[in-house]
Amino acid sequence: VIIFMKSIEWLNNSIRFLDQTELPLNEVYIDTSDISILADAIRTLKVRGAPLLGIASAYGLLLGTQKEIQSSKEQFIRAFEDSDALLASTRPTAKNLFWALERMRNILRLNSKEDSTTLFDRLKSEALSIHEEDRVMCDKIGAHGADLIPMDAVILTHCNTGALATGGIGTAFGVILTAHNSGKNISVFADETRPLLQGARLTMWELQKAGIPATLITDNSAAWTIKTKKVGLIIAGADRIAADGDTANKIGTFNLAVLAKEHNIPFYIAAPSSTIDFSIQSGEQIQIEERGFGEVLNGFGKQIAPNNISVFNPAFDVTPHHLITAIITEKGILRAPYGNSIASMVKQ
Ligand code: MRU
Image (cartoon, rainbow, N blue to C red; front, top):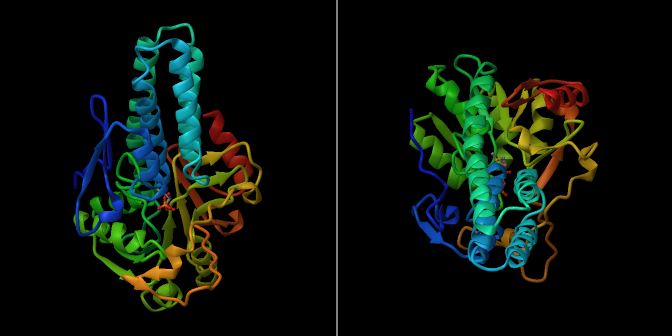
C-alpha cells in the first residue's frame, strides 16, 4: 500500500499545497496564508480536481477570516462573505467547491451568536472534517468499486482522479488502486487528457508511484486501444452529477462513454456524494467552464496553431446518464434509473 503525499494541508495559520502544474518533473510545495494566492492557484490548476477544490475552498475561508478574529464581528463576517465570493468565482463546474462553501456557511449561521474566536474554531473544525470525510469517502468508493473490477482487467481512465485530486486515495483512481492492492492483476491505459495533460502528467505519475502497470495513450487513440488491447472497462471521475445521473467530467469523458457503448464494455463513474447536485434535474443545467484559448493554441513547449484563429476550449463535457453503467459512490453503487437510485441514496 502506497502512502501518498497530501496535496493540500492545513498548517497552523496557513496552507501547504503541491503545485500540480510543476508535476511530474518537480514536487514543489507552496505555503501561503493569502487567500488570493490560493484563489489564483485554483484558477491556474495548481490545485485542482473536484473533491480537492471542496477541501481547498474550505481552507480558503479560514485564510480569509483568520486575520479578522480580533476585529469586530461585522468585520469577521464581511471577510467570510468576501472570501466566499472570491472562492465561488474561481471555477464554476465542480459541485464539491460550492458544496464545501455551503457547509462552511451553515457553520457560520449556526454559530452566529458566538464570538469570532469561537466562530473561527468551529469553521476550522468543519474544514478539517471536510478533508477527513473526503479521505474516508475515497476509501469507501475504492472498496465498493473494486467489486466491479474483474481479475486481469484492462482499464481505461481519463484525466486525474487520484490523491492529487482528492483528500484520499482518489475516486476512479481509488477504485483502480484498491483493485490493484487486492491482487487483481489489473493494468491501466491512461488518456493524456489534452489540453492540460492531467492524464499524462498526473495520473501516469500516480500510477507509477503506486506500481500499477500502466500505459500512456493520446486521447485520439482510445477507440483503437479499446479494440486492440482488450480494454474491459472504462472508469472516470466526476465534477458534477445531476439528479438524473447526467455527469459532467473532464472534456473527453463523453467520447469515452460513446466508445464504451460501441465496444459493449462498462462505463463507470466514481464520485463522492458531495459531487451530486440534487438541485438540478439534468445535465442541461450544468455550467461548463470554458478556459482561455492559449491552453489549446500552445502545447509541447511552443505555439502549435496559427495566430488569429478561433479556438473552443470547454474544460468539461456532460455524459448522458443512459451511457453510464453505474455510478460508484461512498454509499454504494448506483444504477439506472438514476433518478430513483440517487434520490434513495440521499435518504440513507
Ligand atoms: O480541470 P480539473 O483538472 O480540475 O478536472 C478534474 C477532472 O475532471 C477530474 O476527472 C474530476 O475532478 C474528478 S476528480 C476525482
